[in-house]
Image (cartoon, rainbow, N blue to C red; front, side, top):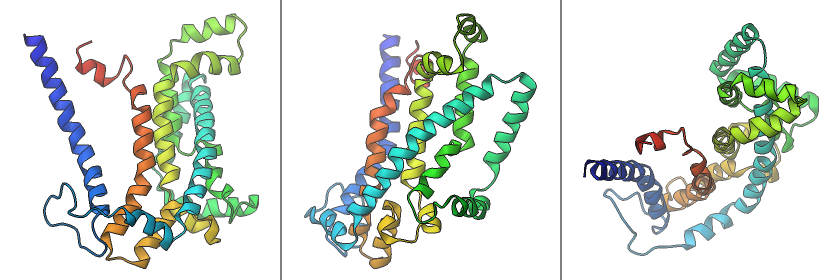
Length: 277
């Protein structure tokens, strides 16, 4: 009886927490279906009186969102896999250094992580100009060659450090090189970390507004965040259309998280601990 009550309490708690995150997304969809020009509802509205799905078609007519979505997809399809590769390699390499060197590089990574991103805008602009990548989508993809963020490297480093040193030593005694160890040992064991970095990297590049504004000059190379901002500049008071643009912006991220969230619930996750296993 106590075990059943405990499981029911855990499920109820999970439902309440999930509702706290899902309901704002649902209300965003509801707000996007209101009649054009209407202000936000002062009370909770579970469904508009006359849902207007035409709002979604209208935002694609106001600005070339289809083109901007294509550009954003090109960026994430190149940048996210490159980030996973470089971040996992860097984290694995960091975990294989001698302990004093690990501590020095770990401190350096944390310091770089604390540096505000805007302080690197000018340096990145000069580097991209030197590489000839300005005003191309390559300017948005280039940071992935450096793992995109020190946080991703640290996540892989902590994962690699959890693998016992005996596993690495056994692999080396069997003649495995660094590439084989990374591919056959580290990569399979780091699936939860890879899923987390995948989602974070996707959000980083999918929602990036600053980089296209700084490094892209041609309107046909703008990405979706810039397109949503253009909607806002064209009609700041048309809240249903602005919410429709926001829903289009956040929908891929929600779908990606729904597809990858099961990788977070592995045997050492908080979810399994709450189940008492």
